[in-house]
Image (cartoon, rainbow, N blue to C red; front, side, top):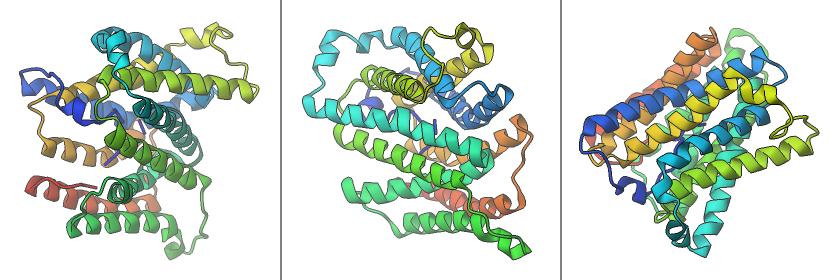
Length: 327
């Protein structure tokens, strides 16, 4: 399972030095999952409370704050010697992966949230796991079990039913552009993950994390200027002193990235625990939407959520039974 706002994954991460106490990793994992799943709801609340904020404003300010706070934490990974270890082909893959992960995917996800709402995006976002399944099979030669394939088909069925179920109550079928935006964001995120796993296994964690945030910030700044936005790095002091934007950057960039990486780096972290935790992101997205935005799922969203929950329970059972590519 892959989430809007997820951290870098690689073999080097899993084999890096980690705390002796496995409990530290579990605590970091819980914090990371809770923050990740609340991101879309908080973003929706932020842009709805101040219409002058754009996606570029929020993501750019968040990324810049994240870079400034994460650089001291990863200072040992950002030495010239570490940067020189990155090969030319890895640089090419790092640039493409960063472009997809830090710019394109969040842009479409946040646009989908503003258009279709958090609950709808949470349901459609589950298709990201199916994207990962297909891409892993094509480019990583990953073997897919019948159990995993069945979970994927159930997920697709749940998403389709959430879209077409209104006709069962005599309502007209309306295709929301937010669904398409969420699908594009999920495909970009899954593609970034596959690129990381194929080409970036040896890149230091700090280089990967910081470079992604810098690339995302730079491209969002260009987009803001290209679209005629008044936003710029120093053009509006209001943006940089707004407590909500600062909270977004601190919680959903700095804390999320740091705790996610710490969880993955923990040698005592069980792959089964990681798999189940990622699977639980879907119901948590719906929970935060109801708590933060006071918007529980609609009737058609409940239909899709119930069907997808079958896939979630099956994925948890599969993870507990043994290692596999879970959905």
